[in-house]
Length: 515
Image (cartoon, rainbow, N blue to C red; front, top):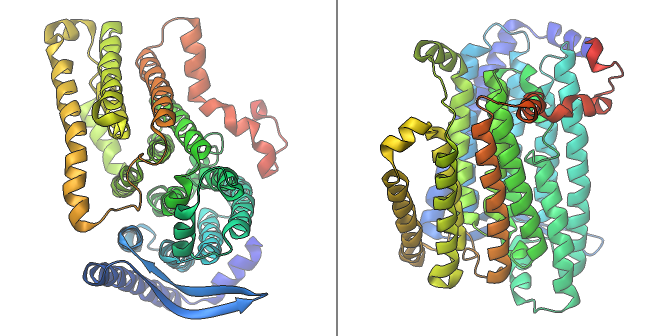
């Protein structure tokens, strides 16, 4: 296969290859302008479905069109802007590479597939674009086919993706069996009309779990995350595209299907629990890494966990905001890794282990936020407070006061922070009502109100304890003392040994000790 690629590339003249690159780069910016136009169209005309054709086969009516709403247009603009920027960066980064035109061809295929995915108006078109996106990304991951590590990582990604595809096929089939349609608008209307204790309502738990499983494989959730840190053999623009764009497809699937999944409590609990475990695991491994790209990879895993955690709480608007913010941040981080290395050498950053009192106080202040969320406003906005509590733990993790610094600053620092976060979380309900009543809700579900408060409270408290455990352990791992902590450090430094345990996926037969 590699010889065929090489022979095809040798037949292409350098001038023809350069022309292809410039044409595709121009088309990337055209696609971004189309996205901007779609955004203005939505602002002027509101939510609507633009149907272009009607297909019928075996008695199934399948309208082809675009679903235009705040979710699809926001993601369309974000994806195309990132793609055009990465294309611009790659003009210089890959200049002189013999496979530069290969990169641009599959970059364009991947971006157009993601664009049609976010604009899809029904499940079948969504799934076809899901497969095409996976195909384009696979081709980009094997940009260097002579590098065995790159091919092995792509094979692992291929295997995990196929597991998710099977779950999606089953979920789509069960959804059609229950609702009799693939169209998103009709599905959402039918789901909202369902009453409890009916066969259709009970089937939503299985539908939710299948879609959650598919989303977990796509967004590198634990334990399906192991392929992501191994894909660094691909060029940096490929890493930027994957970590800032394609990896969000799982989260987008959950947000798009939120009107259906809001009725599946078990699916929400699995999302929140696995999201919290993934976020904590990724953050702990990131603390132990000394390779900047490995740090960024596990940072992505952790951030995807936070995003799924938000979905599990019913905070789909927060999850959408998280996707957009993280995408631009991570694209910038990958495209400027060289500068970050140089800056770190100049600054000579050192992290001080926090004191036990500091860890305890920060955890108690964060717990107070969760308790306030349960108590205030009948607990209807507990997701806001829980998310704010997790952010407070993250802030405390970066501050990491030593014992002497903690005694100097005292209790007032965290007491003030807790008051600020409590006020912000409490006011968020007022802000939401003011903005959303005028502009319309970002997601057709009010955060958590349809999940059942008791179930949501248990989920919030349980997942919050996972974050507290991770926060405390991360502080101890900065300078691990004792045999147990040192063994944990080595375990995390090796990424949980997932590389060795998954070698069979890529066809490796040699023992890791001999390499």
